[in-house]
Image 1 (cartoon, rainbow, N blue to C red):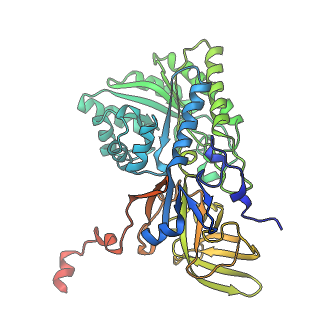
Image 2: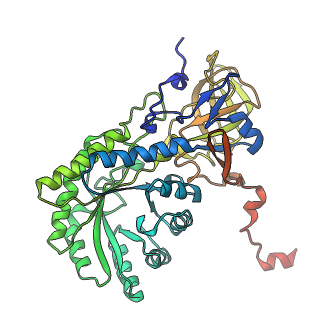
Image 3: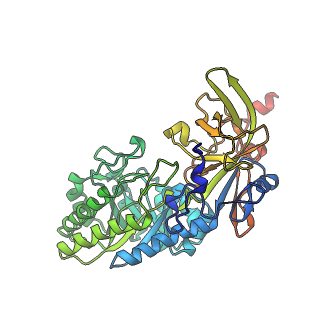
Length: 457
């Protein structure tokens, strides 16, 4: 019988973790229990409770090194990989990527502050966003952080605030190149119909407007064509388009020194997924830009890319504890866990698929039981798996869901007033807390009862 959890037996791709379902340090011990980073997952839950986010440091660092090494191998000019912190933002993640020589992209004052507190140099941070507040712009200017200009409103306020403070600021222009990718429509950000960036046809007006400003220095261009992308051809096309825009900017006196091609490389969530390797993706991007520059007799710009999911997703797992079972004869059996849409909103939001196994039966002996894994929230749509085969299990057993390092913690909520899980880092048999578990009392910290209600009581 073919096991549906045979992904645990797949050969590990050490040099490109995005092609694995599981962290590179995943093992099954002599007691048939699952371990990651040398740490037994059941013991972690006994110590830190559940649900529990677990991040594998070795997988994280291997992903970072794969990007750095591929850029050094394929791009003949200077390069800088920039971590898309929206995937998983924390002081720890900022510190780790800084230690690997990465920059960071942020989309709010909170992410900017987290990056700086984590030790990311301000000259390696870029500030994104399609509706930045004045407070956020002031924070970026005061900390000498490069701003990616997304629209005319952005440009106008950057000019006004930099003039009022008499401070110069480096900027990049984001534009939509119109490249379509076969991905979920909610995360397809590079098409003509997008809330992000200037339209290709308006760039000449933008370049002219920037040339008339006093404190804004246009040094770079940015384009991003989507997320969870498995195709290489769109990125092959992107280089030529961006170099065309460099030539257009030159007509208005702008010397483009940096080219940011965004991110979007997909990862392997399930057996059916087959993303390109980090090496293949970087080779495509690098060759595209380098060839277009050579063809147009341009000096090579600093090449930037913005991986997020492909850095952190495979490194992360979430551990849940099984609670109730409910069998509807002839239809399905519901298996409920102690988390759900508040710690992983992607299934209900994007209909995202994951892989999972039992912590104490990871190779799934007797895989004849199909379950719908339901979360504990008061929503019918709070379902993590519509149908998954698992071995015999009971209340109190643990389930490990793989590929949850990206957009789980960062998109988590307190729906139903449920506290957010703790996050632990595992490496070489040691586990350390990197984000503490919230408590119900923590959720009351910002509640305020109006004075008149207090007086009435």
